[in-house]
Length: 138
Image (cartoon, rainbow, N blue to C red; front, side, top):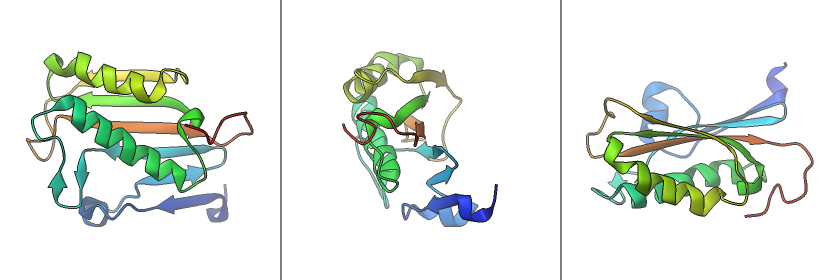
């Protein structure tokens, strides 16, 4: 795969620069979105609320694939990382609101923690850039 076949987008998150990564990378027919939290700049939205953090994180991840002209209908895989097992239902409810009609392959894991202890949820997406009806629709 040539470098021309790979495109990267940044979200402006300071950790992208610090750690040297892109928010999303398109390679061939796939777009991969890195772990996305409820941080917008230096502000954490939904502090203490896993449902709201999941909603903000999914919105940020979907904004990343929108840079490639894609929407929720293009999502084929989601990964959700939670700080606490008690938050499974809240995060699952947020996931369903975004992806109920799409039904991507999904993985939900409980992890030991995040860089910032106020973060309760991190999400990743994988989207397909093939030609399918509704790929860019919500």
